[in-house]
Length: 307
Image 1: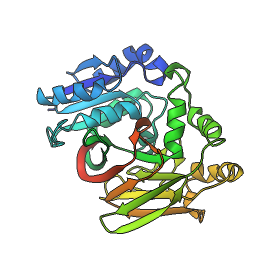
Image 2: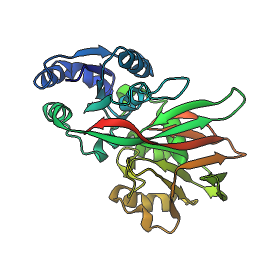
Image 3: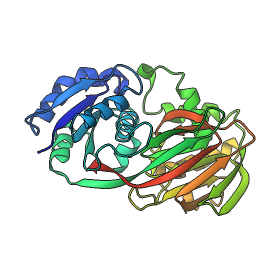
């Protein structure tokens, strides 16, 4: 029997998670006779909570929130310094209660609290890959894990702009509106990529997405063929486009057919080094990261996901 702890992000879903908590708790209680729970109070706290709980012997951590909550908890499955897994048998589950839930949507997790709790109780673990970002720069290497999609370029600039909007004011269309406003002044970036230590690509790209999952940006299918347990990233590179061209092709993103566009290039890779003479920001799972240069490494079968 699992030793279960629930990590609740009360600020997710624009604060509605806190108001829903009584219903969520009862839904969990219907399937788990014994569990403990904690509320996060600030960003990144769920990562430290997860590390402490795993070290204390809990082996099933259930998040209540969106993709950001899932990302933080998943990061906590690894030691901060060594990057080694704390408990390779432990698993993570998620009860969806967030605004941005792209990985959750791709994994087809039910939005109903009772159904999602039942799924976590009865389902088997699925061993999935994780992505690790290693940042360079003058302060020494720093790492960050992601479970869904990381990208550099336009997507990260959108997140930079969206992050200025208070969480209580963000909705399902916030990313798309941010895309429309960002692209008015955005210019594609020149980058150099080294793929798996061999092939080198150098060019100007609007978006570079390193995808473990398929969906980002509130429903945009950036990597239609990605699988989170196939041992590879789908590296999606999009050539520069004009504003009207971006708008015209946004329907392909939502339809999952973006690969039809000849300006979209998709490669399989396990390790990607990216550098640029420009200032190019990175985002991961909807959170703003640091800037290039960076390395993206596929960590195969790194996490037990209860689904």
